[in-house]
Image (cartoon, rainbow, N blue to C red; front, side, top):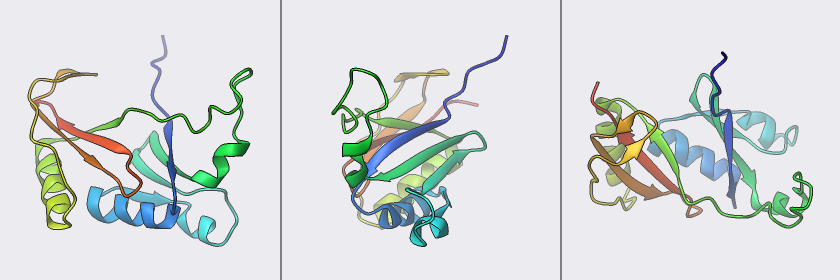
Length: 141
């Protein structure tokens, strides 16, 4: 049996290039198709979470034209509660330090919240420049 994996999540953003910069510098992810977006060759840039997962940073102006599911017209801008990024403990601690150094508000630590690998050791939440909520967590290795 083949395992299913999350390929991408689309986040609506007001300024895709500024969002790429935030996710690169504050979160530590790598931009994808950034130059192509800046040159007008693609509709949006992304940031890579892992070899098989991306966050697509779509301009909010595209929401009106995104009506893919039949019967769901007008639902393209429906918000997601949050996206969770799991990482090892050193990356988790480094992320929190980078966010705090940049003045990005972060929540207090939570402990033992349930996720894909069971209960996480610690997690915290923060917002990107467009208000999308991101949870960061690490599990015991």
